[in-house]
Amino acid sequence: MRSDDSLQSLGWRPFFQSQLALDSELLPARVLSVHRGRIDVAHAGGHDAIRLSGKSAALDITVGDWVLIDADGPQVHSRLERSGVFQRKAAGTAGDIQLIAANVDNLFIVTSANRDFNIARLERYLAIAHDAGAFPVIVITKADTVESVEQFVIAAARLSPGILVEALDARDPTAVEVLRPWCELGQTVALLGSSGVGKSTLINTLAHVGQETSTVREDDQRGRHTTTSRTMHQLPRGGWLIDTPGMRELQLVEIGDALDEVFGDIATFGRQCRFADCLHEEEPGCAVRAAIENGMLESERLRRYRKLQSEDRRNSETVAERRSRDKVFGKMVKSVLSGKRKEKGGKH
Ligand SMILES: Nc1nc2c(ncn2[C@@H]2O[C@H](COP(=O)(O)OP(=O)(O)OP(=O)(O)O)[C@@H](O)[C@H]2O)c(=O)[nH]1
Ligand SMILES: [Mg+2]
Image (tube, rainbow, N blue to C red; front, side):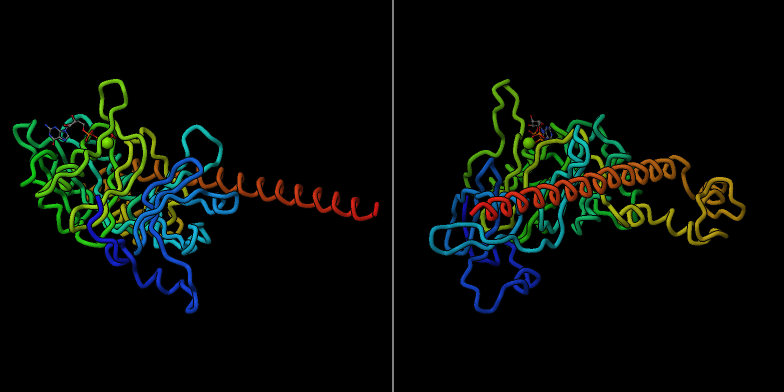
């Protein structure tokens, strides 16, 4: 569904503008979806499906990216630097990073008012939002299935001072209106959350208001409606919503200082410890342990913080090792090839 293809409506920002050469004749285009060997893009002149060549495939393009394309006979020329990116350690492989979405303004962290609701998972998603520079909103769906949703809202609101929490029935057009300010024209919103929490339902309800659009949910042939790929959907007269499949494993990688922002309370207590490198274990004068003892901090929260910290460290090391292995291998291939070329040259 397309209502307006001006660059502004596609989420163009000064940050991207500043990357263009003054005399450039290339067109900026937003990546709406990524397929094997092909991407779908939107630009000021309309939509295009572009085949990826060996060179453009190496650009590691993901949903939400901005690319520069040739105006005649669309071809990807380059990818613009991202304002932020969601990523995770790719499941089951050694040292690969999977990109989830790029250049996202707001993140709807979607969970349900049932067994899916899990504080540790929300902290994990918040770290990912901080790392990607996206503004997080916690959306608790299926509020209609419980007598009182209050306990879920209170638990989520305690995660961070001022954090936005909305509880609603994702199928109710009036209820989802509270989310509308985050998805106005030109805004990009990604939805993350477990399978079945209602991400696609939310998008459908937001998109259907006042207008018929095709349904976002897909039939996976087993009678269930499960999203299988990441795609940007444009709301009528509004922003872009990136639907993602529920991911069972969202392992942190290269999250940097984002954890200290999510666990700002622990970081603040930590600054008052006697030793700057205090591990909050046996050290004297530890303000974090003192906070636990006098009830200002839950020991469980410290445990979760440590768990995410060591997970991030472990995964980041694996990725770094993988990168250096790839680099050595790349150099080897290059030197073998150049040796061959010299050999050939010598024969003539
Ligand atoms: N009662 C109720 N049902 C809901 C609500 N939100 C979603 N559902 C139902 O939950 C089921 C799963 O919803 P989806 O929107 O497909 O979930 P999803 O998060 O997109 O799931 P994946 O694509 O597998 O990641 C559907 O049958 C929805 O109708 C809600 O707020 N209340
Ligand atoms: Mg879905």
